[in-house]
Amino acid sequence: MAVVQLLVFLTVAGLATGRNFNLQNNLGYTIWVGILGNGGKWTPENGGFVLNGGERRTVDIADGWGGRFWARTGCNFDGNGQGPCETGDCGNKLSCNGAGGVPPVTLAEITLNGDSGLDFYDVSLVDGFNVPVQMRPTRGGGNGYSCTTAGCNSNLNPGCPDDLKVWEGDNVVACKSSCVAHNSDEYCCRGAFNNPNVCRRPPSGDYFKTNCPGACSYAYDDKAITFTCQNTDYDIIFG
Image (cartoon, rainbow, N blue to C red; front, side, top):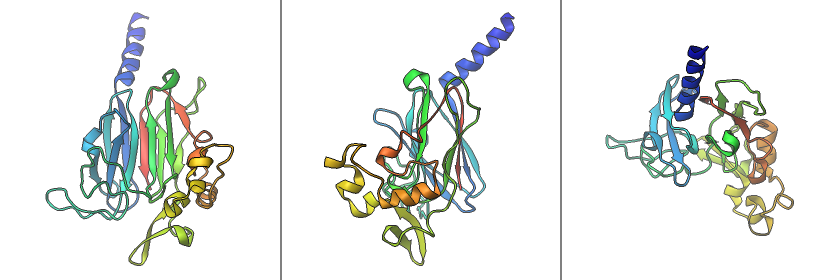
């Protein structure tokens, strides 16, 4: 019995000190992952790296971290890691090093070991969409937490409303949120609209929610689809 208890303790302790985030590129083309820690949190992997089509890479992150992951597309970096990206650009550089992705971009967001020791995670389209993303715990639910797959596995670019489309040549490469496209208090839930009882889902939110019900569609949508899990690793799947 003592041996079993020791093994359980070591397993839980290992999960408490570090988590594996398994990033998988199922898009069929190269992307450049961006990573940004929340305020006061460190930035793993210098904030970015290349992930070829079909490639999988594991990033180990210490417990207590919070931040976001996203995909950059259409990047053209020189030998010094400098250059622009069509979507998700973080300052014309491979290693984002504390810079966020320029909207519109699909975000996988997480806070590890938050309130009551739970992880809180979601996939956000609040600022728009560029590629399908899912965030999936590697364990099941139970004990009061959901451990549900969050995300959007549909390509929203082809059907994006005309006023929200981002074009690169003849291709639609991203879909803006109404807030990003029109920068109004009503669509951004700012000013007099900074209240969940006043701010309503904008036109982009209707489009996003219809096609991706498991992702945040606008600023006050997060409570419905912010999921919880505990003591687990995560798969982040692009595509």
